[in-house]
Image (cartoon, rainbow, N blue to C red; front, side, top):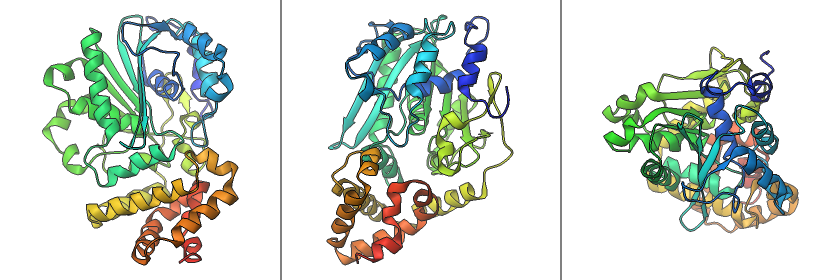
Amino acid sequence: MSDKDNFLKYLEWRGDLSFDKSPFNCVDALIFSQLIYLNFDNLLEQPFSSQISLYNLNRNFINAGNYSERCMMGAMINEGIPGLMDQCANSKRFGKVMVCGYVSLFDRATEIQFAAATFILPDKTRVIAFRGTDDSFLGWKEDFNLSYLDVIPSQKEALIYYKKARKALKGKFILAGHSKGGSDAIYACLNSTAMEKRKITAIYNFDGPGFRQEVIDSKNFAEIRDRIYSFYPQFSVVGMIFNHDRRFEIIHSNGKSFMQHDPFSWAVSGNKFVNDIDFTDDSKYFSKAFNEWVLRLPSDEKKKFVDNLFNLCWASGKQKIAEFEKEKISSTAKILSAFSKLPSEDKKALKENMGVLFKVFMENIPLFNVFNPKNLKLRS
């Protein structure tokens, strides 16, 4: 295996090894963190007692009447995930893993985008995978809400989910998640009771946003620090939001800029990731600029900015970034028209705050180019 190989190559090389012969590792945790991005609605039942093998779940997924629709991952999630599941399902290592307890919540009124499922290994270890931010504006808004909220709805739901899983399923648990899902996993453990914490043997955080410094410095965090395994690509944006513990691995990525957030770009060798020495300068710049912005602005101003920003996104008439990209010209026109109708003080604040996010977000995510302060100036 070379530094060009990812977890698909890992499956080719090690997919025939059972968990008895090759114990659960960080690459396995990442794979489960990717599978939870799939739409399992009406294919998995919520009760933890209703379990299905990954092999049979994959068959049901492929045979679903809306299979093509389920395979549409959107602009920000890798379209190779359905193929990843198929490869896992037909491997000796993953095919007999049982899946249960699927929950998916998506509600604009309460501003929550959340999903989780439990994967049961042959030795009965339970791996709970929390879904990260999807392709929806709502999912991104929940991330941005972290700038002024101590707790977001998906974190609360992650804690509720783990408590239910622990009561229904006896034994040890591993919590894992990519992007926001990684933050959800850490939050669930942090806020569990002492007895509940003891049931968790490991928490895998893959490029998830951090926490306020007082959380990182707390006794509560210190108690679980040794069980947290955090991984970030060398160009990390999402993972550099807020503060994180100093114990982590930097992964070599073959992706460009923001697309390094996509784990399909992460280099794997054997059952480990290929490491890099340090973050890129752009990643460090964004981390410093964003976190200074968070500290500088009062919470009410951050809330107003986030609300205005995403109300403009929804003014496009679209719910997802991929939908916006399909009708970019008309969608952009609607956003700029809505911007022109904002009060002058809101326009000024929006342009000033977007300056902080411009270098990374707007150079790498087409949607956010609409909010280039130069473009907004045209509609002042």
